[in-house]
Image (tube, rainbow, N blue to C red; front, side, top):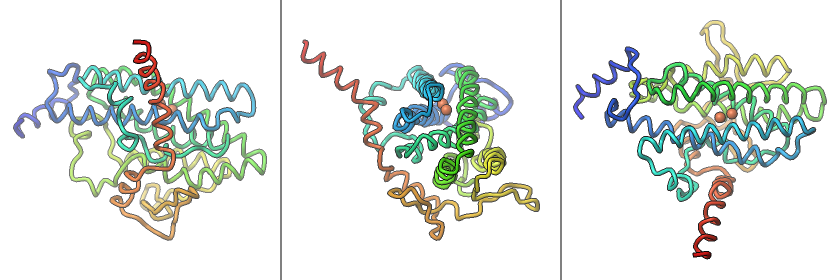
Length: 313
Ligand SMILES: [Fe+2]
Ligand SMILES: [Fe+2]
């Protein structure tokens, strides 16, 4: 593909052209789209195992049903992304059931089990807010028609997830013991939610996702958007967060080093040890403690079914 060819499609989509078929794409577009959808599918699907680790600690049946509804939504969202990938020629059977755990593209934050029910609320309140911010942007701006249409439903459901998180967090603040759990959870999840948006803009020379309008806002713009709702919400319920709005700069600033070194065993940020994005990406590649267990949980049923069929044959 020539540079000219790439520029023609980039200009078309920047002017509002919607890509509907593979014939509308060039190789670069197809590659960026597949990468994006793979990250989205893996993120949706791998959000379920951490939620499952504590859903049975729900304080009442209503909460339990809501948690199950959230998980069902996430599996539906994953299905949408993988189904789109299948239409683009990807072997999703292989992707789902044969891919080694360390090659899944879910956020590092999802490689951890949750410690208690309150953490499920903070997971919904902060991480689903990242999902809502990212997918809301894609819904608004994406040039890929089939994805845009599917995101109508996803957008509404993500908003429900994050509101559910806010309700759990708010209620937990009424009791000193659970209020402390909210703060402990926010302490490790806040920066992790900010990591969802990826490397700082000044470290990225170009982004095919932006050039081809798969998304509309840059990583730092999305981070600001997340902060603009997460910080006021946390403060409104009496939770301390390591970020504040800076009047002079007209934007939110993070009060601790970011990126920062993290101790996965104790789920603690080592705020006296600043990191680079290279270092953070290295940590993501090392994967978190539950990566193998969670991916195996997804894949195991398919392997067992295969085994059963082989024995019957
Ligand atoms: Fe989702
Ligand atoms: Fe969600």
